[in-house]
Amino acid sequence: MTVTLRPMTTDDLPGVMRLEEELFSPDTWTEAMYRDELSRGDTRYYVVAEFDVSGDEDEPVEGPPVMVGYGGLIAYDDEAHVATLGVTTALQGEGIGSLLLDALLAEADKRSPVVLLEVRADNETAQHLYRRRGFVEIGRRRGYYQPSGADAVVMKRKRVRALSRVGGGRG
Image (cartoon, rainbow, N blue to C red; front, side, top):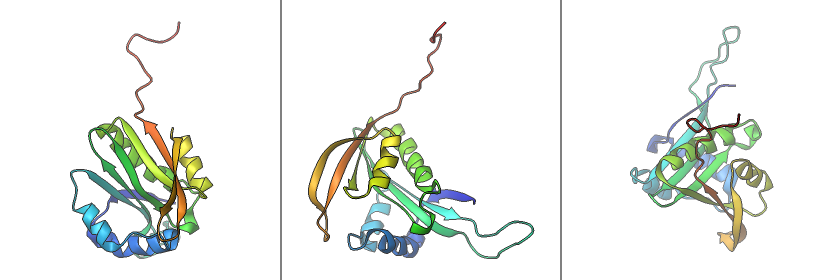
């Protein structure tokens, strides 16, 4: 399976909204919210994950790539925030969420010393992914997701620094 990431554009919004409904209903963002986010390129970084459906040489398939996920980051000099991350249910567990998150974190590490996010308290799979990337729980927000009223776990990750040191190391 070949999945590639590219910057999200307003042309992607119909596909984003289909995934938004599949993944986050009833707590979905609106298309207007995404349009607003995409208009703020100086502090926003949004990407989509696409699955290439062209097949292989033995069984070629025609068609454009299919959007299978997306993610968004809000980044300022002092703090970044993973605003959204979603992968179609049919392909969850295939590494696409990790690919998206790693892209967001690479961008965050260029801009900010710390990254925050909220994740549904009942979404253990996502929390596990975030913990594997260095996030720790720092609090809870009761009734955060609306209109469902679901609670959010607030998580934080500090910038990852390079492990290698010039002339350093054990002998």
